[in-house]
Length: 379
Image (cartoon, rainbow, N blue to C red):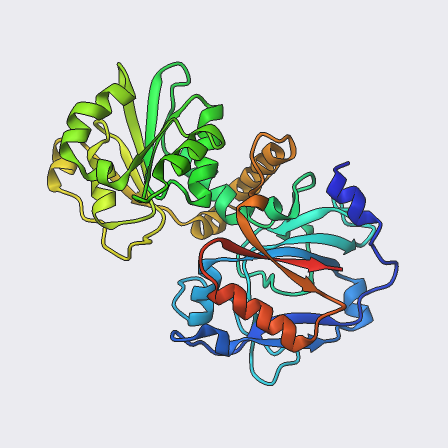
């Protein structure tokens, strides 16, 4: 049994929770999405709780997709309902989160009190002290992960794993490479670690900065990137013609490009690819279009595809479950580095904070830039 699961079991109450607190919204605001949020208190009936799987929240990240949902611009949205007892049809915010099972019916197989779980699909409504669900198939166990790894597996972990493994046949005995921009992002750091386990080499591109050498060294030594280059080098024709071949080595095959930036960065990583290679676009941080020359398609057979983990999960939930379990096992075995030191932790003291203080905490997490904000619940 994992240390996290063991420690959490001591806190499992024998009585049902009487009050749920959830961050809810009934409208959207592109200019300031914090205005649409409120902290809603409600009291599920003992009968409904007794027939449900009851989950207590441990942590949830505040992701860009969560903010986009509050703004009303994200393609995937939860249904709004009056079931929560709100005046207007409302939804609980949040797509990702780690939970502890505090009640489960005896007839439910494969799930026990104290298990650490995450929702299988998005739009679960994770910004809440407690949640319920009716079927264990809605959940995936992630025992052995700390709350920071568990609460980010569904997006970052699954994205990284599927980007690496779903589109390319890698030769573990060859000199196979992938190139990715946004090399300091959470997904990129997981990609480099997973790739190294499979003997796939990574060329990671990061923004030019004063401490470039320091950041590059950490990405290479801590996270396993084979080589880190700057965006200036990525865009420099002479560097790519004269220096890059010596970095890649003999018989190198650059089979995959992972793009989450767009603009000139995306066209530069695409130009480095071999014949019949693939570029996957899973983000657009520069807010610039992906523009590729026709020659890459005509003469090099480039495949340029989009990737959205939410749609993949809906199309193939079994694969999503398998991916989560594989990544969770790697975290549990210490083969993947927990993101706990890479995030900004915001603590929700469930018993010690007023509703206004909790709402202010969440609004801070939405507006504070830099590191990823993860809300952890203190029970």
